[in-house]
Length: 342
Image (cartoon, rainbow, N blue to C red; front, side, top):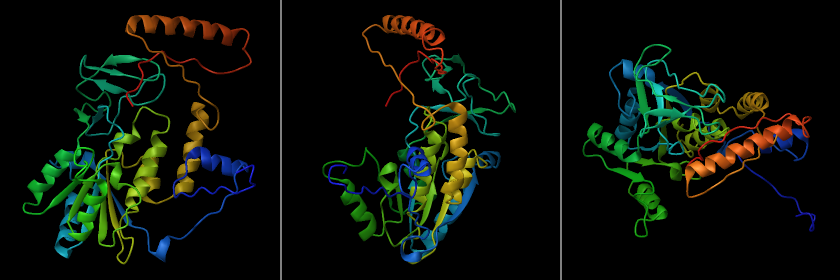
């Protein structure tokens, strides 16, 4: 681009925080599109509080508001897409009554539950503590979060017997049942409900889809990554945009245990500007990109104890340098911690 003096254009309804920050700093020229394609109204969004669902005796994956909206669509012959965010594949603990999520006391990130030893672990700094059965905030029972699309499909068949449900994930997509073939079936055969992972989140344009359900917005919201909020906002915004793209006003139901979380609320309002401002405040407080850079040093070896010992020695040396030769550089040295499974 530089050699040919060409202009490179980026287009997104949910640009990364780094890209938006570069535009604010003047590194990129910014052009805003204020209206939706075809001038259609954005979907009406309803937030379903899964804490209240449990208190009402409904511990399933389909909330009462979403079930009611699905019934309306089935009666009207309109189609629905249900999205289960699988980014957060590691299991987490969460209080089903107050929404409390155990966080690392050093990093303020949600800890991952390890069933092998019944402990919670931070994959940033290595902090570990026993997992409790009850919530330290309200005394409610801690819930293991992490359901899959197959279980959703089974629950839908039980709720709507005789109705065809199409599931699209890595288990159903194959050489014979490709991504394109499944989507073609959904559109041409007017299959009432499509359940899918990130494959259904972006780029789909079906005129008969008027309802979208985000089944568990919290799986990515509390992922072990400083980009967790950004990814959650982007995914919710993108998948909600699959509804009502042609003639009818779309509806969307976001199921969450954190109905008052700023990321959920801004995504429900389609308000990227408010999300960006809030996220930048968090990035500045935590010293995360784009405010500063993060350098990650990864080590591998056959014996875990040897790798850990080597990294501890390296950490000691780095801390010594930061206190001496590079004392003017105010940067913490974190870890070592077990690498995340990607």
